[in-house]
Image (cartoon, rainbow, N blue to C red; front, side, top):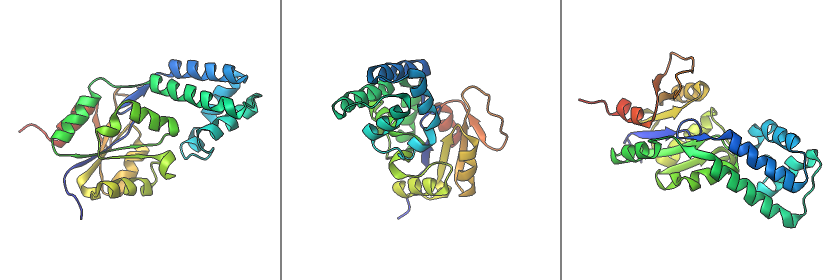
Length: 223
């Protein structure tokens, strides 16, 4: 049965949360040094494999680290890997923070009767972030690319989210900071809101919002 209540599909990074990149780079540098790898090489490997890691193409966390460290001159013993994975996990839990008002905005949408989902292109660290921030307890579904093997703007990714919510495309809206993701949603008949917190995204096709409070206003305008 299709649930025709309003459904809001929320991106994670740069929509609900932001990455403190200096903190993340510092944590990655410590990890590389601890593993005996060249830090600059390791940082480069992380940057170059974002797309692959967002689909878990490098394997589970320990295997991913082995493959990232190998080109940088490090081959940690298996006994060391658990500690290195934990260091990476702690780096991301510490290095990603919710925007002011984001959590309350999500809760207000829930009180309005909206069905909510987080849909994000991310690696396994993104799953750690969602849990650390408690976002998984605030929404009806969490769909992360590394878990499902799909990425936005693939239509199949958006259909999967709608299916998990039991929602029709017409009753849903995607809130995202990337225009290409919104275009894919619009092609499916889903509403769109461009999260443009800094007013810098050049696009005239999608309504802009600056925060989650404005998402609520766009869906429930004052009488």
